[in-house]
Amino acid sequence: MEVGLDSSIPVRVRFAPSPTGRMHLGSARTALYDYLLARRTGGKFILRIEDTDRKRFVEGAEQELIDGLRWLGLEYDEGPDIGGPYGPYRQTERQEIYRKWADELIERGHAFYCFCSPDRLERVRQEQLKNKQPVRYDGTCRALEPEEARRRVRAGEKHVIRFKMPYEGETRAYDVMRGEIIWQNRDLDDAILLKSDGLPTYHLAAMADDYEMRITHVIRGSEWLSTFPLHVNLIRALGWPEPVWMHLSVFLKPSGKGKMSKREAAAALNDGYSIFIKDLRDLGYIPEGVLNWIVLMGWGVAEDDVMTLDEMIQRFDIKNLNPAPAAINFSKLDHFNGTHIRRLAVEDLAGRIKPYFERAGYRVDEAKLLRIVPLIRERLVTLDDCLPFAEWFFKENVSPAPEALVAKGLTPAESAAVARKMYNILSALPEITHAAAEPPLRALVEQLGLSPSQVFGILRVAVTGQTVSPPLFESMELLPRHTILQRLQNAIVMLEQM
Image 1 (cartoon, one colour):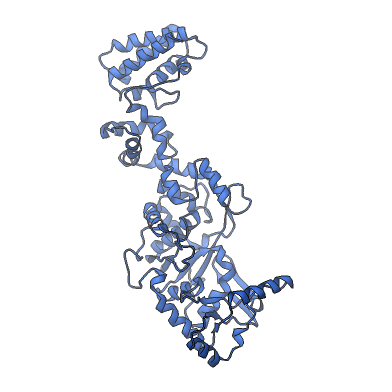
Image 2 (cartoon, one colour):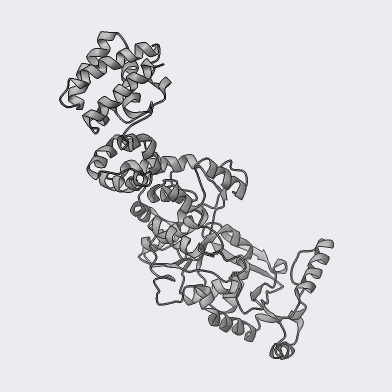
């Protein structure tokens, strides 16, 4: 068995986002795979906030990340708001730890103080570009005698700490999804580990935290492949145990050509879709549908598999993760979301759609809503679809388009006559139930020599105000008798005035 792939051994995994933007599909998929692996093995899922990039810090981003995880049902075992044995869980609260390990690297000869100014570094960069050389640190301060460097530090000279990457040989590392990867060390750079303000870069902070928090498996985006050799060398320089590495596949825009950009994201939102988790929630998607959608983008199982979170846990295996790029397919999101909506219990779905009616200004009778849900559930793709399909249940009056009341092949006057005959039949009934109303109305269809779609189409538009609705006779049972008769009478007046 390959190292790190024994699902019987509890793992410790971390979702470690930076609060520099919104929670998107890539972040959610990483967190989901972390969660599934932790739950599959009886391990721990940790949330760590990597907030050392203060220039790009976005107020409220951390809370959006936490809210997104909770909405998706990905409850973490340790984190900034709940604590844990290896806290604190925000990197800005762990600076002493990073300084300790940076100093340790210097003592071991694997790092050095660098005093180069930004202006000098930019001149070197431009010269390298001009000469078509690889852009990398030129090693000026690497050559300083250690004692001279310490003297300059003690004198208060501004500096950073860089990692001393080996110049010769090669670096080899193993990725579960990609196999062994090899880099020539001559092509690698002496990256900054500790900035002049004392804050660490991602490279030192993430590796130190993974060690301190006993992380066994690192699942992260493929954008970190370029600095993978740095992280491997840093870990090995300190003699730390190396985690199992997995760099996930890239998300492509729906066309399959290129990564999703801000422009494509904005276009998707105009079409009622989004790559951001909070937006998907606001658009009426449910966590079950979103999770089922994203779990399959990079997991080598059938793309139409419908799974609950518990079923994902039982089936998840990191050996099935696929490094091939995955195109974002919003049609599949609709498919999975609609499927999971139809799998919800009536009471559960009623509770989820009730706020949509209330926000639209309707008073919702819960008993009535429980009877409405079975009639509309099959038609819902998102939760907010409940409004166009069912808000007419809660309205005092409806306002159908006059032309929609005219049956195909009939004039307004002929349609009014049909509506009048239906009114006479329904007004004679003590109660307008499915069993009582359908037989005489179907008899009317036969008597008139018209099609059911012509006759019932007039009734549907008159009662619901729209051409598409849940099953008509079952729906009419949920309206007061006087409401049905009043709406039908209003339709007759409209037709007679055309």
